[in-house]
Length: 166
Ligand SMILES: [Zn+2]
Ligand SMILES: [Zn+2]
Image (tube, rainbow, N blue to C red; front, side, top):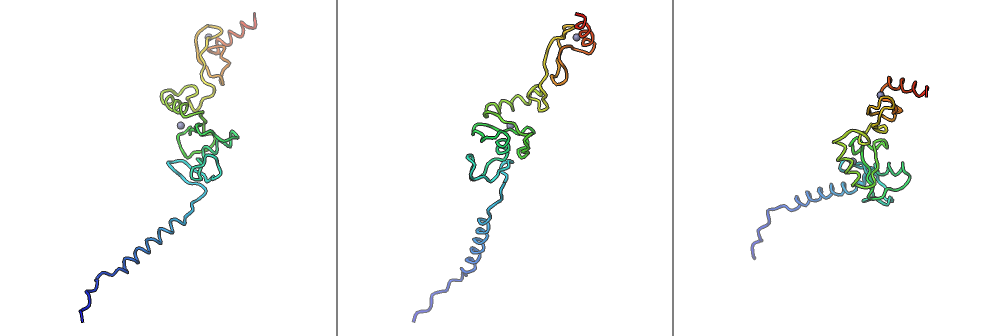
């Protein structure tokens, strides 16, 4: 009668138990279905699986906000810009629509070099350069603040008086 084979000293059941608990945790992770919104690269995504531009069921919230405002779906080449550069600030007053990314990028390029005119977020019609009706001096004015006829109050008074006389 042969002697018995040496028994393996390793207890495999211990490892099997570890694997089981690991797998269990994995399943728990997969069961998590997520919320109606999530964040990706600083942007807010909304669960809209039926939206024509949905990616994996999600749509960028700032595009949805803009679509609600203009009453139609955005074209894929249209770009919605965040005025204050905060990607998750999706209030409509913080959003600006660009026809395409070329115009959007152009806006970014000029924004830093000049804060005048339409590049200024506080733009109220822009500064206009014109000549004074009375003294002929060149001056700048804001459409929202002046009629743009005279460079100063003095010229305005004198000019109006002259207009009255004529
Ligand atoms: Zn932008
Ligand atoms: Zn003047």
